[in-house]
Image (cartoon, rainbow, N blue to C red):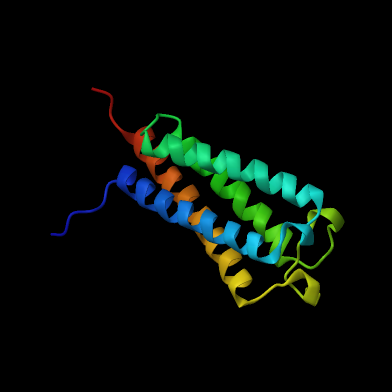
Length: 142
């Protein structure tokens, strides 16, 4: 019978992918130019990056708070990036919509890949964190 991967190992793997997704998405923003997004989107993106990097640190230090941080940053980021990039431009300064983006926003196939990769990685780290929390809650105390 094949061994299953522990929830903690799954969280570490998901976090490594999450870190790569952060780099890819950030690279797309640098390629497009920071001037194509509003000050609000830039500020929220910077805040998200700080919390994301802190979460990566917690996970690889195997800190007890890491799974909760992974759940929070994962779901918050997935929702945020979906609202900002994948919904129509309904949210004014909170939008950097890729839907019918004007040419000056320099949205390419790579932009779509980066955003979808980021959202997928966000969900992966959140669900991996939930798996660790579920295992901890069902563990029988010694």
